[in-house]
Image (cartoon, helix red, strand yellow):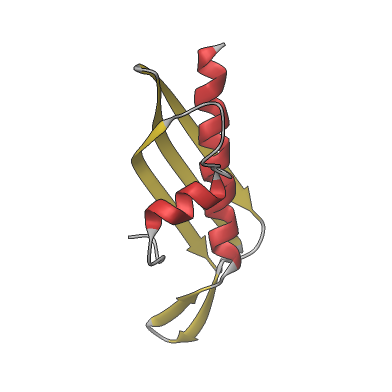
Length: 105
């Protein structure tokens, strides 16, 4: 589960969706995998999505790895996701979208 209240609005924001935009696309998220770890310190995200533009479906994948942990250890068995980890997710969403649009060309 992605720790955001409204995933649809989060995705629209990450993709900089505009209601007045010329291209209308329907986004389908196939998979989101967000990994945060302290040793070695990195966070990573992989997104697989489909983009439907006028009935033509394009598949895109985005993978982003950033050299920072993405989580804080609060105790022996308790971790908290850092807000920066959501930036990793935003980048992976945008990367998958651009990858899908590249299939269109």
